[in-house]
Length: 245
Image (cartoon, rainbow, N blue to C red; front, side, top):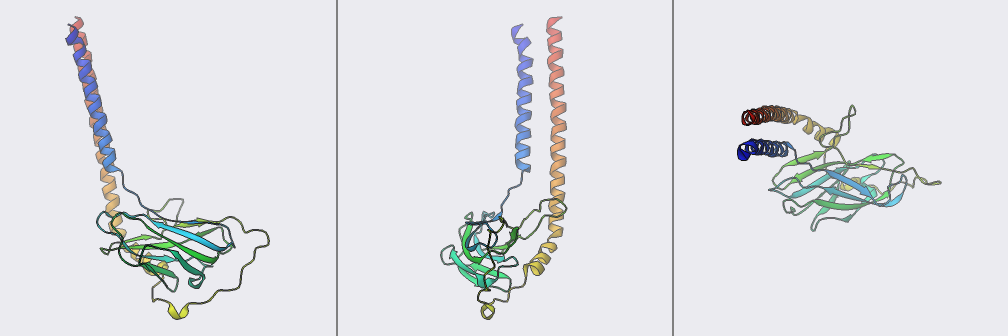
């Protein structure tokens, strides 16, 4: 009698445990991986001089490494106002008409691309945007150039550096040297790269459809689990009633 009374309860617990494991696995498969491009400063203050900016591009490819970066400088920082401080071994900086490129021997897959530049002076702004385009050794391109719109966070946000207010008495220094003679003929990211990002609309729409399908799948799993657990509970109650009659 003892075995027949507790066996249904144990069976119900097994069903509940199996359901929890299945749900956890489903949610884990549905969770997307995330990568970012980020920027920090040793002195994040408006009109600060000789500031070191540190950039990190997080690797998101399992098969290829970074080979090149392109950074668009915000208004108020000219290509001639920066110098390279640190970079991956063998990487070189070249000025463009709106920022700079940095590249060299491809990094190993999974290795973040980190570099530092020194800026002559930061502009008198509250925040600075550094649109970044990353190119992998297999030709894959990631564009971290989007800004928040309509209160929504973008899928590939551009690196943003927030600045404290300028110190009392701080002034804009005289313009630095120009590099017009050495500019690379790189198109503006606000034109070509944004246009290229727009050309990815179909791919992103397909991805959104996949995400919707994932949501439907999760909903189906939850509904199935509810039915399964309800059936197990009914079976336990029925067997209890039978054993007591």
